[in-house]
Amino acid sequence: MFSEPLTIADLKKRAKWRVPKMFYDYADSGAWTESTYRANEADFAKIHLRQRVLVDMSNRSLASTMIGENVSMPVALAPTGLCGMQHADGEILAAQAAEEAGVPFTLSTMSVCSIEDVAEHTTKPFWFQLYVMKDRGFVESLIGRAKAAGCSALVLTLDLQILGQRHKDLVNGLSTPPKFTPKHVWQVGTRPFWALDMLQTKRRSFRNIVGHAPASSDLSSLAVWTAEQFDTRLSWTDVEWIRERWGGKLILKGVLDTEDAAMAAKTGADAIIVSNHGGRQLDGALSSISMLPKIVDEVGGEIEIHMDGGIRSGQDILKARALGARGTYIGRPYLYGLGAMGKKGVTRALEILRKELDVTMALCGKRDIEEIDRSIIAKVDF
Ligand code: FNR
Image (cartoon, rainbow, N blue to C red; front, side, top):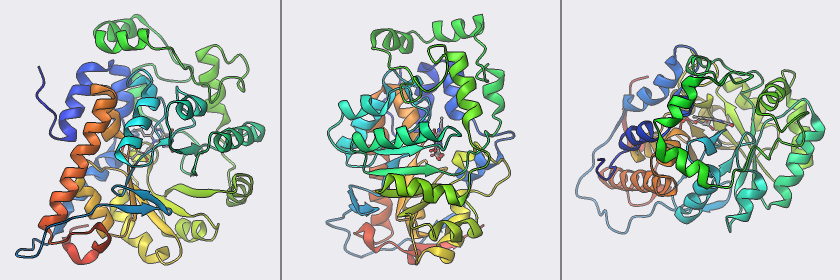
């Protein structure tokens, strides 16, 4: 029915066909009018590259490092909550695909599979993303569990002290508490391959959170407890508190403003991720890629800079690298792969990106990703 996926857009089409609407929409949605979500993707097309010819393009290398860790190309899997609803055991499958591809996987606090589930099914360290909750005992226990599981970096998300409103989720009943209706039964019933996988898999239900939430065996109370736990008073002092408790590599995720970047650079963190949460938080914010060069100019000499938001091709990764991002992250591209074809789909998404990155780099006349800088850019229209 579907031919071999050649682009991330192909994987997206397949995911839509296989995943129940409420979960496909959950991945595909942005906040309010989705203008920032759209801008994240659209602004990459405003960057034009210099075409170079008759330079040696043999023996190319995409290998690089992110926070000192070797990566086979400068891209990591971003943390995505409910990843395991795109495909049964989604977090485990995505982590395994990332490990095989030689790129980092970041596990979200809001995962279906737990830190321990992923550690048990992988052989190399992965990264853990932390949301700071009001219940600091819970935060400390998550940090302890991430350490015990051998996670090699903590990604601290700063841009979700309060949840941005995503209209599609509300329409689909993915509210707090979630509202389950016959519509959902229909949506699942019309996606039999997804449902079959879910039924055949040992469910690993939200074990990062279960046990901490009162009445945590019931999904509704779990969702309500979690939503109430986001800390609206989070401050830079808390970042210090977390850094001390963690004691390892720390990445601050969700910086989009130069003043915040200056503050972040002073925390002693190892990297910041220029990000607007994939357009899921402040609708109307500027795209990540358009803010990247400003933030690089502000603090690029002080701290390693990564970015995410809107990457849909390997060419986008090259553009981000050229504008100063040592590392990039993908969210939806691997979720589409996962929803479409499970682990094979994540592997395919990474292969597509790698191929596009390699060919684009060669056509820009470069052989090594480490040589990439602003000199490969012809013009930027934002
Ligand atoms: C996210 N993102 C996210 N970020 C985070 O720090 N913790 C989380 O639990 C989640 N959850 C989440 C769920 C889904 C479905 C999406 C799409 C995104 C944001 C994510 O880490 C990343 O910033 C964006 O996905 C990057 O944008 P693209 O690549 O999806 O365009």
